[in-house]
Length: 543
Image (cartoon, rainbow, N blue to C red; front, top):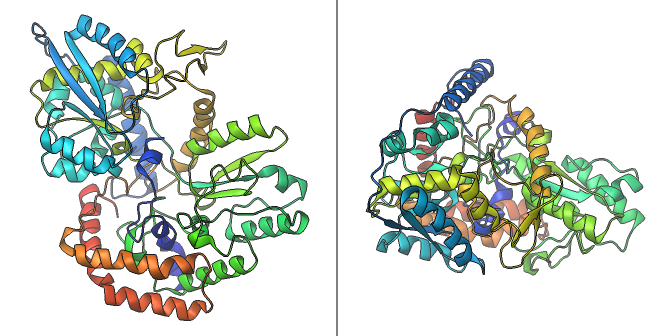
């Protein structure tokens, strides 16, 4: 039983603490900061097919995507593009420059509108319900699949073929196919593959100083922390709070299908995704919670962890030696930058969990896309404007960086350098318009590209090479919403203390947690989830 669980586990208890038991560990703002069509065969056939598709798409891109329909631009069209986030101070100035170019090229303008991050979910849903927008930012974490199913967006295959075949060739069928909902394409993903696999970032200078092991397993993390505690007893080790929990490090132990996790304590191995098994009711879960109890008793984190609020920049300010929750390569590059500026004698390193388990993949291409609203009165012009914003170098630089000489400059290596607090890099909240082939690089992005190359080599060796097999799945909890809410409440009350090691008797606390889950209707939630998940696996050929 234990061997079986070790091979299947997506140790969901960790991700569940970040989002109740629902398995979504990312906030919307964090989420802002590829999959080929899968086959049911083994790794060798899958890798061959991936290589063949990649070569075919490259040739298609070189030759062009076909001949576009001649667009009637005799009448001016004014479009609205809705983005999630906050408008930068100089947004109108940038928009004016963009519209000068769009009017000349396609006799159209674009009005960028922003949700802000306050109550963005309600604003986003209301905006799509009331209409008045043409182009809309989409992401799997902002309910793209559910909204597409509800008819909020126009199907795009015909428009893409007739208006923007070159953009179709640029993005490629494999990326577009990840964005299909019931076979239909409703969003155009950006041309940028992100490796967002979570991991830990830690003080490498302290590891080297005291000759400690690299903290890439739970056992090594324990030895690392004990070594620092012994040599520097005044050093605070970890900043554990009610929003974070140390159990994310079990990602080093189990082959997760995705860093956001599977809900309800279910466990899914990346190599055998159609097998759904249990974690919360396994011996492994009990033993893992005993390790958390041990670490809490050793003083790795505060006894008031559950009521604590996260310290801003705890590692950079010396209040922690490791970030372990919600940290991905992109965030890590900014910590590198801050530490280099503030503590040049320090050294930090990032380790993705998949570097230990061998399960690494880029984020599903649904992560950053652009849809055309069902209410759009000029979908052909909207598609063409989207194509220009994504592929025209002058327009893309304006959207991503602002006005050269006023908002930014390029150094001798062509690297972005900010000149203004009124418009920073990516300030328009438009990750859906990133184009890796033409985008200006920051120092952090250049470092991120190096990490991505390393992760791509690891991801190429998996059964589904460099494929986020979970990211395109959207669970509908409506049929069991009552039980879903009750299970969430049980997690808040009984799971979090276990994960923080704040219980007297682990065995008794685990038994109580399991009993409360049963009373809340966990089996109803699990059966509903499994039915949907297995149907998804069948549709996409995940075995």
